[in-house]
Amino acid sequence: MKILMCPPTYFDVNYSINPWMTRKRAVKQHIAKTQWQSLMNLIVSLGAEVELMQPQKNLPDMVFTANAGLIYKNQVIISDFKYPERQGESQVFKEWFAANHFDVIDAIDTFEGAGDGLFVDSKLVLGSGFRSQADINQWITKMWSINPIAVELINPYFYHLDTCFCPINETKALWFPPAFSNESQKKLKASFELIDVTEHDANLFACNAVVIDDHIILSSGCHDTATTLEKIGFETHFCETSEFILSGGSCKCLTLRLDC
Image (cartoon, rainbow, N blue to C red; front, side):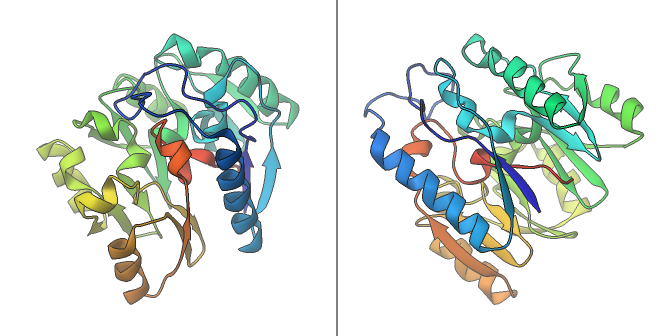
């Protein structure tokens, strides 16, 4: 497994584009760097290979590589970010993927990559409502001959799909039901064996987990979720991500799987 990460050299919360970014407390840069390094070290210790991007001074959210794009085989749809504060990331990500021999595709509408697009074996779940536009679904269907499961996000604190839904194998997924519309809940229930996450753990980004085979990396404090996962055979690991939660992201947001 190969995972793309970007060091938090310039990570900060200088603006507010989601409800977590209140700016009530400044990011502690040295702690953020330690937390990021601990996550990377844990990922490597579990057998994954990490590729690193060069951080850019005026793009503090580049650290959240999950939003770089959506990968399918050797193709990548480069994200077209909703907010101007992140739009400069698209060209940087595009250049990295081209240099690393991916077939690069520009999104035709607002779309935020693996933040709102998650593959579960051969199924693709696409989220919309706050960042990515629902119109992108039909375009992806035609391009990749995939019929995605389109879901609507309704809670602004869970503005990306990967903050409230996490596939853990080919059939099972963690989820936080109140983040989805009623119709979307029905779709997901019909497609997967779902494991409910408590509100407490959801607000600690339990669904923003990194899955490496039977190992699941969770944000620190998600004890109920860890207990549930361990009962069904997974080994869980905690990683402190408090500084990144100030920006509305955690473990999964800081990673992008390259070998999908």
